[in-house]
Length: 268
Image 1 (tube, rainbow, N blue to C red):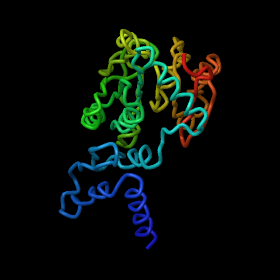
Image 2: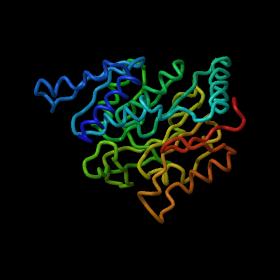
Image 3: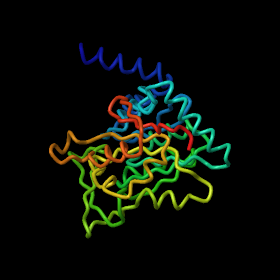
Image 4: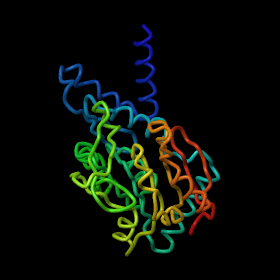
């Protein structure tokens, strides 16, 4: 009985926040095709592919139903909006870099929230990257199938319990996944873009990303980081990130599982 009531409540919340067409995801199961990917429609955003035996449903719910990347302070949210408009007024396209983009739901959220920005989504897992492309193509998101780090090189992928949202990267000179850096992405788009937002959800590899060459942190209007110290106790995987944020004078907010660092100078 509890399970039935729980799932009924979840469906009510899905319909209320994301629209009744989101519930059409149940049709394949009714028709006996539960093992195939399904298309869902999120109100105001469009279609998304959800893979069976993945965490896609939970990710979409967290981002669109629960507003997972909404800045939890009206004053800070207005400050970021002001920075967005200031970049456009200067003829610069705001650049949003989504590190650890998974199925593309976060990239799509940013593309809808800031429609004149260029979103670059970085995702090392081939399966996730393919779904990310499908889910974000209509927004013009550029998907980079690579890992992110503080220096170039290669990594290997480590998947915990075959979970699509828990793919880790480890430095390995023999790895088959290339590492790109944030400065490289910025330089590639420097002709007409200026850094605006960086989102980081890379399963503990933030220790590598913030190891050095972190000057770009101060150029963000907002930096989102999902910390993973809990996965690696005693290793201080967010130590470099915390130091960079303090050095650059960013203000810290907490929203659900994310640390949200907002530039204290506003537009820059």
